[in-house]
Amino acid sequence: MLSETKAELEELMTDIKTLANKVHFKLKNMQQSVEQEETVNVRIRETQHSILSRKFVEVMCEYNATQSDYRERCKGRIQRQLEITGRNTSDVELESMLERDNPSVFTSGVIIESSVTEEAVKEMKMRHSEIIRLEKSLRELHDMFMDMMMLVESQGELMNNIEKNVCSAQDYVLKAKEETKAAVKMKKTNRMKLMLIGACVAVCLLTVIIALAIGLS
Image (cartoon, rainbow, N blue to C red; front, side, top):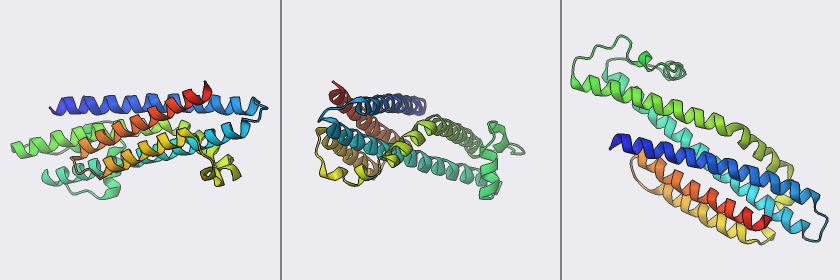
């Protein structure tokens, strides 16, 4: 069951990264298209692009925050398991250990005297693996995220007046965003919580892709 859940979680993270990259690509294309247009519809297209860009950044902020929160929970579990094995570590020491790719750093000097200690060692290795994977995912999305942040910031005055404009894409994305918030409130296990949030974020990103496809058609 644990291996199946882990596989599902990894698949969700891969899907989200793929969708995020597609949205980023389409938003960049849309921006270039708007810049080249000289019709009366330019203002509408600029507004639509601004709304989508901002909502995309908001969704990715939530996703990044969720990943960071999950990392802290994994770190907390590792610290508790270290205590079970008789090792007390400070937050600074633990962070230094987490930066290493070799999970043996957690088991160095640990004598497995019981099944409890053995299970603690297994969980530490598993949580460390999850943290490494989360950090890799965050690094992969970092450049794209910063590019979108700069784009949204550069939109300036148009962003201040964005709520005065109406387009179907806004309604779709806002609805998906509310579904994401609802998922956050669900009191599930940490792993299932991340999976549900990931699924909602994936739906939200897919909605943006559909809205963009309509806007570019």
